[in-house]
Length: 338
Image 1 (cartoon, rainbow, N blue to C red):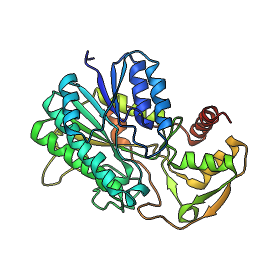
Image 2: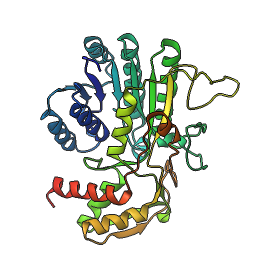
Image 3: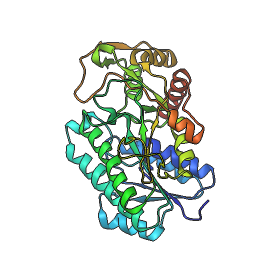
Image 4: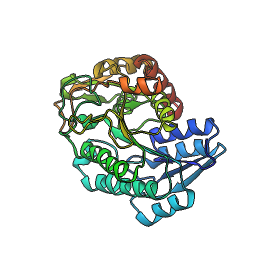
């Protein structure tokens, strides 16, 4: 363990706040960075931060990682041995409206994090990728051994770009980097732009829920505590070169550089209408369902192969959707006082 703090970017975000809390519970020092962008109600981000600031060992720095000079100064001052980079412009749909937000946060912000990690002795950089990198792939479950060259949204393209940028730094500067392909994460303190929250809110307000692709959608819903467990186990396992890697038959999941990608998913997809059933039961109210066509940039199904994660850290996400939805609803009711 190091005397230097862990950097968690996006610490006021959904996954970032949970990872920060877990590290603090383990007695680690955490510096949390966030720019509190108003992509969704900043009050939720501020409330997550308030929870973190109650704990010893947490320091918050309000910073836009796209600001090159400010980001460089932070890395120079703190010399983080471990960086968990979860800050990003999220969401597939929004990338159709404001593509520049994705370039600023996901590309510019990431290059500044890579530079800071390179110049100031980072021993392991973990960063959020996404299941959306699988794009137009239809072979299920999605495996890290599959190629991911056909993104269907700019958001997905920006996440694939992060994996490529990380590889170049791992290759040139031997910075160990690990990409985390998250699959539909949900749970307490979740994001209001994601299905679980949208559905719960609509049910409570007696408003209709839109089920896209006429309800024929499957998602590998992954409970946030399982995501945190995966991340925390990986922090102390920096990526190492794969001795079996060959340029003749390149393995897409590893490299002759200290670079890796993992799927972080529940390995158990569910039909979206079934999740609506569970929310109805937990909230004690019926849902009004509206069937709608597929949306641009969306995919009909996600399903994670997590064998590599299990092999390397001895853990696979396994919280059942039934338990997870019940816990989310309990938090949602408490948070909103309903």
